[in-house]
Image 1: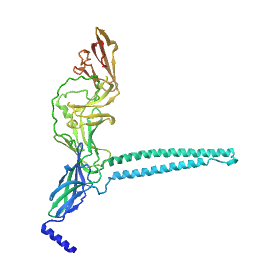
Image 2 (image 1 turned 180 degrees about the vertical axis):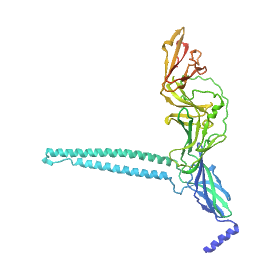
Image 3 (image 1 turned 135 degrees about the horizontal axis):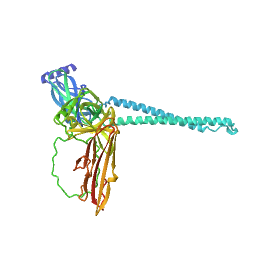
Image 4 (image 1 turned 90 degrees about the horizontal axis):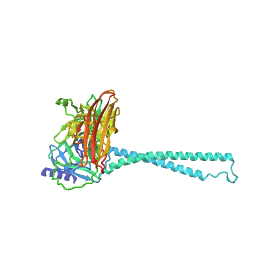
Length: 530
């Protein structure tokens, strides 16, 4: 009977030209990942042998953060009928290796804690037993020397119990802290899980037997991000400024990327792709509760701008990219990393090197003694296209030592200024000259004259260039008038009141600059500090 059934199916195949469909589960590997600011495109590859007929290919353990609308499948020589995702809730969950190791570690820690708990319970039992049998000698009593021996023994045992108790408690606290960290790391992974085995289902048809047909499947996933950061290294003032661009990558997709070809892209697929409309701005009367704010500019590098004397200065730029191939497109920059990378899901962020950039810099010191008496070593470098487009936090290293954090961002100027840290060998003092400052009443008005002196002393063994800033207050009230008495030969900006001096201070030399102004305002008013 079975033989006749087989012959019937074979005959049916030749009569209809169709074969019985099959379901295959080929092993796929992630070959490449393209990371954007908030998503990533994953590329999986696999090979499969196909007999004539219709086949359903199932890829297991796909990220639960997949975007089903982004699925693409590339294959030649077969008819591609459909590509879709589904969830198999009956399949067992596959845990990453690092999760299994964390669970094993947590189990061992709990075993240690159970031992400590049992030891502490034993101490309590022994102590209670000792105290319950402390009566000695009965009605006949006990000799004094024997009583002393018993008391000493009791004291030694109680002290031993106490010391053992505190030792075990300290061990418990240490292992409880480790257990909390392990549990928190596991909780982070578990919180990103979605139940079921997510699969990609591909349906294909072929009219002939084919061997080792290559497939490539691409799809977008969420729970991925990268952040640009810089290391800025300065060897000395005679060397170029080295910019090391890096990417801090985090991914909690549920898929481990092992030895994949990695591409980092500056584009953000979730951002708006259309320019916003500018609507009319309608004016209305407004009566604010005005409060004067003193704004401190913390970006001390942006204190000096000098136009290049000729275009030859731009030729000093030297760039060298050795970590990735850079593809600058119309609206984005793409870094194709030269080496394969491994980034596991749920682990701490991974930092990869993207590019190095060497720029000839102009070094000088800058100071704003009204706000801070320290002089900051500052460097001005050409505003490179890469630095303009990729902004991020930066760590600054001077002669191999970390000096602080700064920010590399977009600039509308032809140069970028960076602060490299304070130098205590430049001594700056800002004083108000009392003998030249006074306050008088003239009718219904107060008149205040203020004169300041800034003293700079260079204790270094070499000359320095110092860009010094201060200000003369400006009035936005018609009842308050400001008269400039002395700018001290500074570059004076009337609209902002800024005073800027460019000083060349020789080794062990002291220089002074002076400036002064006069204020006139109603006698019954008080003005804010300036």
